[in-house]
Length: 357
Ligand SMILES: *Cc1c(COP(=O)(O)O)cnc(C)c1O
Image 1 (cartoon, rainbow, N blue to C red):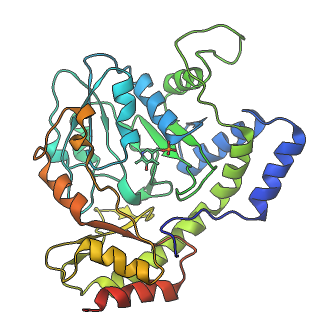
Image 2 (image 1 turned 45 degrees about the vertical axis):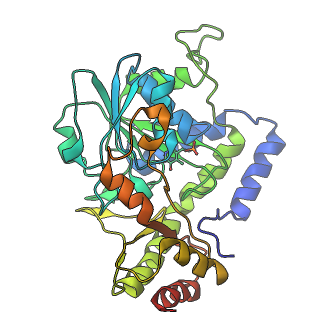
Image 3 (image 1 turned 30 degrees about the vertical axis):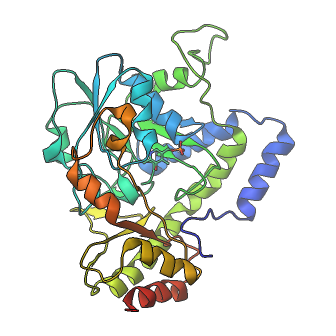
Protein backbone atom coordinates (compact mmCIF):
# COMPACT_ATOMS: atom_id res chain seq x y z
CA UNK A 1 0.00 0.00 0.00
CA UNK A 2 1.28 3.47 -0.92
CA UNK A 3 0.84 5.41 2.36
CA UNK A 4 -0.44 9.02 2.55
CA UNK A 5 2.46 9.94 4.83
CA UNK A 6 5.84 8.43 5.52
CA UNK A 7 8.95 9.82 7.24
CA UNK A 8 12.20 9.87 5.22
CA UNK A 9 15.25 9.11 7.31
CA UNK A 10 18.76 8.54 6.00
CA UNK A 11 22.22 7.59 7.21
CA UNK A 12 22.70 11.20 8.37
CA UNK A 13 19.92 10.87 10.97
CA UNK A 14 21.11 7.41 12.01
CA UNK A 15 24.67 8.52 12.68
CA UNK A 16 23.53 11.72 14.40
CA UNK A 17 21.43 9.66 16.82
CA UNK A 18 24.26 7.16 17.34
CA UNK A 19 26.57 10.04 18.24
CA UNK A 20 24.12 11.30 20.88
CA UNK A 21 23.70 7.80 22.31
CA UNK A 22 27.49 7.37 22.54
CA UNK A 23 27.85 10.76 24.23
CA UNK A 24 25.55 9.71 27.08
CA UNK A 25 23.83 13.13 27.07
CA UNK A 26 20.34 12.12 26.05
CA UNK A 27 18.05 14.79 27.50
CA UNK A 28 17.87 18.48 26.53
CA UNK A 29 21.37 19.77 25.93
CA UNK A 30 23.74 20.95 23.18
CA UNK A 31 21.85 19.35 20.29
CA UNK A 32 18.58 21.01 21.34
CA UNK A 33 20.32 24.39 21.54
CA UNK A 34 21.82 23.86 18.09
CA UNK A 35 18.47 22.77 16.59
CA UNK A 36 16.83 25.89 18.07
CA UNK A 37 19.49 28.17 16.56
CA UNK A 38 19.22 26.53 13.14
CA UNK A 39 15.42 26.55 13.16
CA UNK A 40 15.28 30.25 14.14
CA UNK A 41 17.71 31.02 11.30
CA UNK A 42 15.63 28.94 8.85
CA UNK A 43 12.42 30.81 9.70
CA UNK A 44 14.11 34.19 10.01
CA UNK A 45 12.95 34.76 13.60
CA UNK A 46 14.77 35.81 16.76
CA UNK A 47 13.85 32.88 19.01
CA UNK A 48 12.95 29.23 18.51
CA UNK A 49 12.16 27.18 21.63
CA UNK A 50 12.07 23.39 21.23
CA UNK A 51 9.32 21.22 22.74
CA UNK A 52 8.38 17.59 23.20
CA UNK A 53 5.53 17.98 20.68
CA UNK A 54 3.54 20.45 18.65
CA UNK A 55 0.81 20.15 21.25
CA UNK A 56 3.11 21.21 24.08
CA UNK A 57 4.35 24.13 21.93
CA UNK A 58 0.73 25.26 21.38
CA UNK A 59 -0.08 24.81 25.08
CA UNK A 60 2.93 26.96 25.94
CA UNK A 61 1.83 29.62 23.45
CA UNK A 62 -1.60 29.70 25.10
CA UNK A 63 0.08 30.09 28.52
CA UNK A 64 2.36 32.86 27.20
CA UNK A 65 -0.75 34.67 25.95
CA UNK A 66 -2.05 34.57 29.52
CA UNK A 67 -5.22 32.65 28.74
CA UNK A 68 -7.29 31.81 31.82
CA UNK A 69 -10.84 31.40 33.00
CA UNK A 70 -13.34 33.44 31.02
CA UNK A 71 -10.95 34.33 28.20
CA UNK A 72 -12.04 33.63 24.65
CA UNK A 73 -9.76 32.22 21.97
CA UNK A 74 -10.88 32.23 18.36
CA UNK A 75 -9.83 29.40 16.05
CA UNK A 76 -11.08 27.20 13.22
CA UNK A 77 -13.27 24.13 13.74
CA UNK A 78 -11.56 22.46 10.75
CA UNK A 79 -8.29 21.39 12.37
CA UNK A 80 -6.70 18.73 14.54
CA UNK A 81 -7.96 18.82 18.12
CA UNK A 82 -4.50 19.76 19.46
CA UNK A 83 -5.09 23.31 18.21
CA UNK A 84 -7.96 23.78 20.64
CA UNK A 85 -7.41 21.45 23.62
CA UNK A 86 -4.77 23.67 25.31
CA UNK A 87 -7.32 26.49 25.55
CA UNK A 88 -9.72 24.21 27.42
CA UNK A 89 -6.89 23.04 29.71
CA UNK A 90 -6.26 26.65 30.72
CA UNK A 91 -9.95 27.22 31.43
CA UNK A 92 -10.53 29.42 28.37
CA UNK A 93 -13.42 29.25 25.93
CA UNK A 94 -12.86 28.12 22.36
CA UNK A 95 -14.80 30.34 19.95
CA UNK A 96 -14.88 28.94 16.43
CA UNK A 97 -15.12 30.82 13.15
CA UNK A 98 -16.07 29.13 9.89
CA UNK A 99 -13.58 28.49 7.09
CA UNK A 100 -12.98 29.49 3.49
CA UNK A 101 -13.84 26.45 1.39
CA UNK A 102 -11.11 27.15 -1.18
CA UNK A 103 -8.16 27.34 1.22
CA UNK A 104 -9.65 25.35 4.17
CA UNK A 105 -8.29 28.11 6.47
CA UNK A 106 -10.23 30.37 8.84
CA UNK A 107 -12.36 32.96 7.01
CA UNK A 108 -11.46 36.35 8.52
CA UNK A 109 -14.95 37.65 7.77
CA UNK A 110 -16.45 35.00 10.03
CA UNK A 111 -14.32 35.95 13.04
CA UNK A 112 -16.40 37.56 15.81
CA UNK A 113 -14.48 39.10 18.66
CA UNK A 114 -15.77 40.32 22.02
CA UNK A 115 -14.23 42.16 24.96
CA UNK A 116 -13.20 38.72 26.27
CA UNK A 117 -11.24 37.75 23.14
CA UNK A 118 -7.57 37.41 24.10
CA UNK A 119 -6.04 35.33 21.33
CA UNK A 120 -6.54 34.11 17.76
CA UNK A 121 -5.15 30.73 16.65
CA UNK A 122 -5.29 30.53 12.85
CA UNK A 123 -4.09 27.21 11.44
CA UNK A 124 -1.91 27.06 8.30
CA UNK A 125 -3.85 24.00 7.26
CA UNK A 126 -2.41 21.34 4.94
CA UNK A 127 0.67 23.50 4.30
CA UNK A 128 -0.40 26.97 3.25
CA UNK A 129 -0.61 30.21 5.16
CA UNK A 130 -3.88 31.80 6.23
CA UNK A 131 -5.17 35.19 5.14
CA UNK A 132 -3.49 37.13 7.97
CA UNK A 133 -3.84 40.79 6.92
CA UNK A 134 -7.55 41.10 7.87
CA UNK A 135 -6.84 39.26 11.14
CA UNK A 136 -4.15 41.80 12.10
CA UNK A 137 -6.74 44.56 11.81
CA UNK A 138 -8.66 43.04 14.72
CA UNK A 139 -5.77 43.98 17.03
CA UNK A 140 -5.80 40.66 18.93
CA UNK A 141 -2.57 38.71 19.64
CA UNK A 142 -2.02 35.74 17.33
CA UNK A 143 -0.64 32.26 17.90
CA UNK A 144 0.02 30.81 14.46
CA UNK A 145 -0.54 27.03 14.34
CA UNK A 146 2.09 26.27 11.72
CA UNK A 147 2.31 22.58 12.66
CA UNK A 148 1.67 21.55 9.04
CA UNK A 149 3.46 24.41 7.33
CA UNK A 150 7.23 24.33 7.89
CA UNK A 151 8.78 26.16 4.92
CA UNK A 152 5.50 27.56 3.54
CA UNK A 153 5.71 31.20 2.47
CA UNK A 154 3.45 34.17 1.79
CA UNK A 155 5.05 36.86 -0.35
CA UNK A 156 8.38 35.21 0.42
CA UNK A 157 7.97 35.32 4.23
CA UNK A 158 8.17 31.94 5.95
CA UNK A 159 5.65 30.36 8.32
CA UNK A 160 6.77 31.15 11.85
CA UNK A 161 6.52 34.90 11.27
CA UNK A 162 2.76 35.46 11.07
CA UNK A 163 1.85 35.51 14.74
CA UNK A 164 3.26 36.95 17.97
CA UNK A 165 4.15 33.28 18.38
CA UNK A 166 4.08 30.31 15.99
CA UNK A 167 3.94 26.61 16.82
CA UNK A 168 5.44 23.78 14.73
CA UNK A 169 5.17 20.00 14.99
CA UNK A 170 7.79 17.40 14.10
CA UNK A 171 5.53 14.39 14.55
CA UNK A 172 6.52 11.40 12.41
CA UNK A 173 4.07 12.21 9.58
CA UNK A 174 4.89 15.92 9.27
CA UNK A 175 7.02 17.41 6.46
CA UNK A 176 10.07 17.08 8.71
CA UNK A 177 10.25 14.96 11.84
CA UNK A 178 12.03 14.35 15.11
CA UNK A 179 9.82 11.34 15.98
CA UNK A 180 7.82 13.49 18.36
CA UNK A 181 8.72 17.14 18.78
CA UNK A 182 7.71 20.74 18.37
CA UNK A 183 8.95 24.33 18.27
CA UNK A 184 7.63 27.73 19.30
CA UNK A 185 9.02 30.72 17.40
CA UNK A 186 8.75 34.36 18.44
CA UNK A 187 10.55 37.66 18.06
CA UNK A 188 9.76 38.69 21.64
CA UNK A 189 12.44 38.10 24.30
CA UNK A 190 9.90 37.98 27.12
CA UNK A 191 7.73 35.36 25.35
CA UNK A 192 10.78 33.17 24.69
CA UNK A 193 11.83 33.45 28.36
CA UNK A 194 8.39 32.43 29.64
CA UNK A 195 8.21 29.59 27.10
CA UNK A 196 11.59 28.24 28.25
CA UNK A 197 10.50 28.41 31.88
CA UNK A 198 7.12 26.77 31.28
CA UNK A 199 8.78 23.85 29.48
CA UNK A 200 11.17 23.35 32.42
CA UNK A 201 8.89 23.26 35.53
CA UNK A 202 8.90 27.05 35.84
CA UNK A 203 12.69 27.14 36.38
CA UNK A 204 14.86 29.68 34.58
CA UNK A 205 17.66 27.23 33.84
CA UNK A 206 20.14 29.43 35.71
CA UNK A 207 19.20 28.95 39.36
CA UNK A 208 18.32 25.31 40.02
CA UNK A 209 15.14 24.57 41.95
CA UNK A 210 13.80 28.13 41.87
CA UNK A 211 10.28 27.96 40.52
CA UNK A 212 9.16 31.25 39.00
CA UNK A 213 5.83 30.01 37.68
CA UNK A 214 3.72 26.87 37.39
CA UNK A 215 5.43 24.75 34.77
CA UNK A 216 5.59 21.48 32.99
CA UNK A 217 8.11 19.04 31.57
CA UNK A 218 7.78 19.78 27.87
CA UNK A 219 11.47 19.45 26.94
CA UNK A 220 12.80 17.93 23.73
CA UNK A 221 15.57 15.32 23.98
CA UNK A 222 18.99 15.67 22.33
CA UNK A 223 18.12 12.41 20.55
CA UNK A 224 15.14 14.06 18.85
CA UNK A 225 17.02 17.31 18.20
CA UNK A 226 19.85 15.45 16.46
CA UNK A 227 17.29 14.05 14.01
CA UNK A 228 15.74 17.50 13.60
CA UNK A 229 19.07 19.14 12.72
CA UNK A 230 19.51 16.69 9.81
CA UNK A 231 15.85 16.88 8.71
CA UNK A 232 15.99 20.69 8.62
CA UNK A 233 18.83 20.50 6.07
CA UNK A 234 16.58 18.39 3.84
CA UNK A 235 13.15 19.94 4.34
CA UNK A 236 13.38 22.35 1.40
CA UNK A 237 14.16 19.43 -0.92
CA UNK A 238 11.31 17.41 0.59
CA UNK A 239 8.92 20.32 0.09
CA UNK A 240 10.09 20.88 -3.50
CA UNK A 241 9.36 17.24 -4.31
CA UNK A 242 5.91 17.53 -2.70
CA UNK A 243 5.25 20.58 -4.92
CA UNK A 244 6.33 18.71 -8.05
CA UNK A 245 4.10 15.78 -7.08
CA UNK A 246 1.20 18.16 -6.46
CA UNK A 247 1.71 19.65 -9.93
CA UNK A 248 1.28 16.23 -11.53
CA UNK A 249 -1.99 15.72 -9.63
CA UNK A 250 -3.20 19.28 -10.33
CA UNK A 251 -2.60 18.84 -14.03
CA UNK A 252 -4.14 15.36 -14.19
CA UNK A 253 -7.25 16.06 -12.12
CA UNK A 254 -8.11 19.57 -13.27
CA UNK A 255 -10.71 18.58 -15.88
CA UNK A 256 -12.64 16.03 -13.83
CA UNK A 257 -16.14 17.28 -13.18
CA UNK A 258 -16.88 17.46 -9.46
CA UNK A 259 -13.29 17.20 -8.24
CA UNK A 260 -11.83 20.41 -6.85
CA UNK A 261 -8.02 20.52 -6.62
CA UNK A 262 -6.22 22.59 -3.93
CA UNK A 263 -6.45 26.37 -4.32
CA UNK A 264 -3.74 28.76 -3.20
CA UNK A 265 -4.31 32.01 -1.32
CA UNK A 266 -2.78 35.14 -2.83
CA UNK A 267 1.01 35.23 -2.60
CA UNK A 268 1.17 31.75 -1.07
CA UNK A 269 3.56 28.91 -1.72
CA UNK A 270 2.09 25.58 -0.58
CA UNK A 271 4.22 22.85 1.01
CA UNK A 272 1.48 20.21 0.67
CA UNK A 273 1.66 18.57 4.05
CA UNK A 274 -1.56 17.16 2.62
CA UNK A 275 -2.71 17.28 -0.99
CA UNK A 276 -6.43 17.60 -0.33
CA UNK A 277 -9.10 17.53 -3.01
CA UNK A 278 -12.83 18.03 -2.57
CA UNK A 279 -15.16 15.41 -4.00
CA UNK A 280 -18.43 17.24 -4.63
CA UNK A 281 -21.86 15.89 -5.59
CA UNK A 282 -21.06 16.52 -9.27
CA UNK A 283 -18.47 13.76 -9.28
CA UNK A 284 -19.90 10.42 -10.43
CA UNK A 285 -18.43 8.51 -7.50
CA UNK A 286 -18.90 9.03 -3.76
CA UNK A 287 -15.93 9.77 -1.51
CA UNK A 288 -16.24 6.37 0.14
CA UNK A 289 -16.26 4.60 -3.23
CA UNK A 290 -13.23 6.65 -4.28
CA UNK A 291 -11.35 5.61 -1.14
CA UNK A 292 -12.20 1.95 -1.84
CA UNK A 293 -11.20 2.21 -5.51
CA UNK A 294 -7.78 3.59 -4.55
CA UNK A 295 -7.37 1.00 -1.80
CA UNK A 296 -8.12 -1.91 -4.19
CA UNK A 297 -5.27 -0.56 -6.29
CA UNK A 298 -2.83 -0.36 -3.40
CA UNK A 299 -3.10 3.39 -2.87
CA UNK A 300 -3.79 4.85 0.55
CA UNK A 301 -5.72 8.06 1.11
CA UNK A 302 -6.96 9.93 4.17
CA UNK A 303 -9.84 12.07 5.37
CA UNK A 304 -8.56 15.11 7.28
CA UNK A 305 -10.81 15.83 9.07
CA UNK A 306 -14.00 13.74 9.10
CA UNK A 307 -15.71 15.78 11.86
CA UNK A 308 -15.20 19.47 12.58
CA UNK A 309 -14.30 20.16 16.21
CA UNK A 310 -17.51 22.06 17.03
CA UNK A 311 -19.45 18.79 16.72
CA UNK A 312 -17.70 17.40 19.80
CA UNK A 313 -19.58 18.16 22.96
CA UNK A 314 -16.67 19.51 25.00
CA UNK A 315 -16.67 22.62 22.80
CA UNK A 316 -20.34 23.40 23.43
CA UNK A 317 -21.60 24.00 19.89
CA UNK A 318 -24.17 22.24 17.76
CA UNK A 319 -24.72 20.93 14.27
CA UNK A 320 -25.39 23.71 11.77
CA UNK A 321 -23.21 26.31 13.52
CA UNK A 322 -20.41 26.22 10.93
CA UNK A 323 -21.95 25.04 7.64
CA UNK A 324 -18.84 25.42 5.47
CA UNK A 325 -16.67 23.30 7.77
CA UNK A 326 -19.48 20.74 8.00
CA UNK A 327 -19.88 20.51 4.21
CA UNK A 328 -16.15 20.45 3.48
CA UNK A 329 -15.49 17.71 6.05
CA UNK A 330 -17.81 15.44 4.03
CA UNK A 331 -15.96 16.24 0.78
CA UNK A 332 -12.24 16.25 1.56
CA UNK A 333 -9.87 13.49 0.52
CA UNK A 334 -6.10 13.67 0.90
CA UNK A 335 -4.04 11.84 -1.72
CA UNK A 336 -0.43 10.65 -1.36
CA UNK A 337 1.94 13.50 -2.24
CA UNK A 338 4.94 12.74 -0.01
CA UNK A 339 8.40 12.78 -1.61
CA UNK A 340 8.56 8.99 -1.86
CA UNK A 341 5.51 8.75 -4.13
CA UNK A 342 6.78 8.22 -7.66
CA UNK A 343 5.36 9.72 -10.82
CA UNK A 344 3.92 6.37 -11.93
CA UNK A 345 1.79 6.20 -8.78
CA UNK A 346 0.63 9.78 -9.27
CA UNK A 347 -0.36 9.05 -12.86
CA UNK A 348 -2.12 5.87 -11.72
CA UNK A 349 -4.18 7.93 -9.22
CA UNK A 350 -5.12 10.32 -12.03
CA UNK A 351 -6.10 7.43 -14.28
CA UNK A 352 -8.20 5.74 -11.57
CA UNK A 353 -10.10 8.93 -10.76
CA UNK A 354 -10.90 9.32 -14.48
CA UNK A 355 -12.42 5.82 -14.77
CA UNK A 356 -16.22 5.68 -14.83
CA UNK A 357 -17.18 2.14 -13.81
C1 LIG B 1 0.23 17.76 14.18
C2 LIG B 1 -0.58 18.93 14.57
C3 LIG B 1 -0.63 19.40 15.88
C4 LIG B 1 -0.02 18.67 17.05
O1 LIG B 1 1.29 18.34 16.91
P1 LIG B 1 1.90 17.07 17.71
O2 LIG B 1 3.35 17.20 17.45
O3 LIG B 1 1.29 15.85 17.12
O4 LIG B 1 1.55 17.25 19.14
C5 LIG B 1 -1.33 20.55 16.14
N1 LIG B 1 -1.98 21.22 15.16
C6 LIG B 1 -1.99 20.78 13.90
C7 LIG B 1 -2.72 21.57 12.86
C8 LIG B 1 -1.31 19.62 13.56
O5 LIG B 1 -1.34 19.18 12.30
